[in-house]
Image (cartoon, rainbow, N blue to C red; front, top):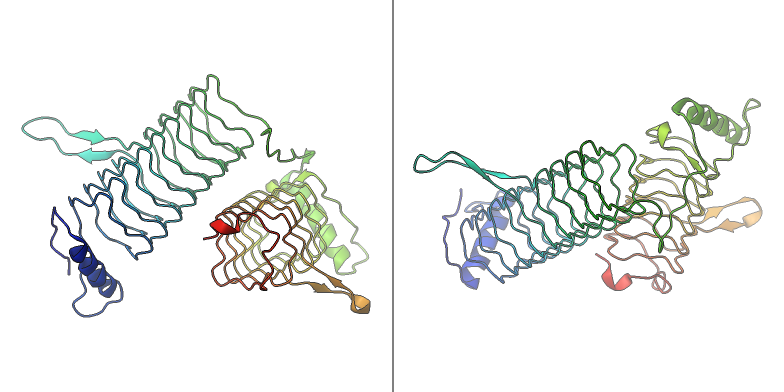
Length: 404
């Protein structure tokens, strides 16, 4: 069932709609999907609410709050959201076509696959059909996950995308003049025919990004001066990477044909997915593995100090005793990873080292961090739901006042 739309809402009516929506999501009798279409909801607080599949089309949501709300699949077509706050909100698959998000805050929001494109409008009174463009000017998407999001044709002038994950996103024809993408993941991002005048893309991983017909006058690229990520000393072909990795695995397993392999400073991205591979004691400090699928990998005792692991999938990986000190783990998925000490012969114990690692916007759900070294580790906006931590584990970490 669907609730009737209303243009004017008081707090009691909102609470009733949210309660019925919760029952709807649970499949309980009497539940009704929340439909706020066209509602006057400026300044209202929906923080932490479960708003999956709710309807906010054409709403006045100026300065409304959705911090930490679950808005997956929700519809916001044509909504006016000037200055709205959606910090840490989940907007995966949400429909935001024709939305006005001028000055909105979407720091660390999850927007994978969200649709921000123009909204088609039917013609009226004999006039032809038109489109309503989405406006993101001056919005803050710092650290947001926008992988695969559709942003074609948006206006995002002076918008902040620092540390955001835009891998595979579509930004063709977008107005991105003066936008800040420093240290963002834009591998495979489509910027074709976009305007990037005076945009800042320093420190970006731009592997496979498309810039066909883009206007790039005064665009900044290259190493970021404040947070320099090491450039790979060399790039391996897919065949070279596979040959060396096979040799490493054979050496670890004691095969006579195996040989020690040193991947220090090399770009391993051409290897493609390494999910489930046995890479125990991998030696790859300062190597580039950005965006690779390493889920379920055996990485016990791996040497990955200073490595670029931004956007890596490390869910369920065995990282016991790994050295990740100074590594770049922005947007890395470490859910369920094993990060306990590695027991060696003679009763020796090798702890996981994450000292001074950059772990902003990473996900550590259900990971075991009880004895990991976290001195100087930047965990701002990291997700720690279900993570196992000792009482003093985060004592030396940075950004813990902004954990999600």
